[in-house]
Length: 275
Image (tube, rainbow, N blue to C red; front, side, top):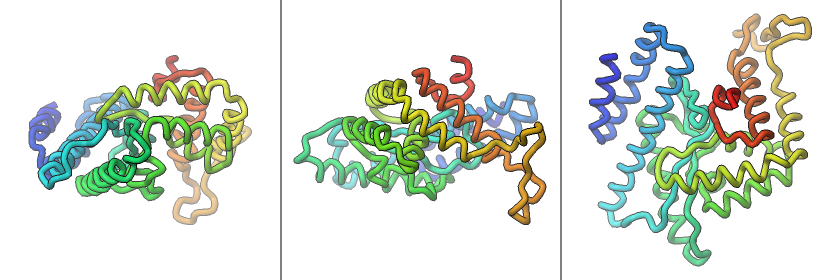
């Protein structure tokens, strides 16, 4: 479409205003593609691809600005990852930020210097993403939070802790994380972390069972006789069905659980089903 060519043209403008224009153009692009009968899943994939590329462009602009201010080059390599719908390639028009950093290992005595650098990157990256139209995550699932900004060995240790502890909090943090995909930086770090996740989870039947129990609390909107379970408590939505929380979310979560059990490393729901 002509609009897609316009977005590609805008892609050559690396100013924050230029990047913001790309984000704003997505609404019209989605309308045009859906009007052309493109399947909704393919529209989602394209929107996700554009959004994930915005991470790269904003991140590179942040590093250029920091270098000009005397911060220098990154002290070690790192990868920026996205999670949730961004990791699955299933963005709608207004996804919030679900991101983190995988940082190459470094000596403990260098932590203050190196983490200070990446904390600054995270603060600027998340600020600028919010500015262009990818808002802050209300749950603080962003690289500005140390929980989501770790070295590769720290990530592996944290996932090991989640799978051993198996608390409700640990299960839900892991559930957010397991759809991660790299969008910028040293991709080898993300590949190594994905392999570690597969090893730690695939044969951990206790943890998988706990994930399953957590899924039971997020019921699909289907009654025992095949009818829809409608909203009864929230006055403004009585008689309606929440398609996200009682429709797609239980499906996505169930397919993720099966993929983890079978060692499938794909994160797209449709590709997981295909495996």
